[in-house]
Amino acid sequence: MSTTSSQPLITSYAKAPTRAVSAGGVSFAYRELGPKGGVPVVFFVHLAATLDNWDPRIVDAIAKDHHVITFDNRGVGASTGEVPDSVEAMADDAYTFIKALGFDEIDIFSFSLGGFVAQALVVKHPELVRKLVLTGTGPAGGQDIDKLPGVTYLDILRANLTRSDPKEFLFFNRNTTGKSAARAFIKRLQERTVDRDAPMKMKGFQTQLKAIKKWGRSAPADLSKLTQPTLIANGDNDRMVPSVLSHDMHRRIPGSELVIYPDSGHGGIFQFHSEFAPVAVEFLAR
Image (cartoon, rainbow, N blue to C red; front, side, top):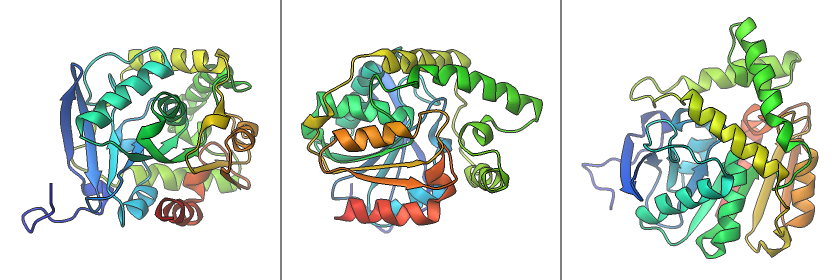
């Protein structure tokens, strides 16, 4: 589909319309922006997240020169169907979605649970993925990933008591710097005012947690087989997916690059968006 005068180029995530494509009995909700042509960058989102959970500062920076696609996987947000209870099945659904859009090659930008799904997809379909960005994530069988549900429920409780967004606790340190970065991040997520996504359903959220626990307890994959250029990033104090796992993936994925941001947690890339976005852009442009 070419960009004509009747279809102005969209470069702001807050203004990208929500579309749908049907495949494998599922209607997948997605948004796209940036110039068409070339290898698209498909964004794989985190636990309990919908299309509205991507930081516009990162999406917009990448969409300046790349065709960016964000999507709700099966059972999430406005996509139909039931959330699967394994990361591998989520990867199968992502593959169905990507093929439905007609792509044979993509770059992946992933965060947290999205990074688990991205790894499972690359292991199954190495030919599909040209470049891989893994942020705030870890490998199958990674140390303490199976404890993530417990951490999540505790922080949801803490957030409810203070009437704040659970992401403020889960993604950021609870010091002055972290609290201020958390508030700024939550505010950026509100920049889109129309055509917001449907919220995550509690049942789907619980199923995702079950899938995460399985991923944490599963046999490690052979990451030495990954031939894609890979960029790994995290904060130095990730309570959800321990930062040590970013170092672990970096050791196991040949030629991978690692960026760790100081005094930051799971959402290190969001806290340091002005430093991280150019790094991601340069990596994808290479």
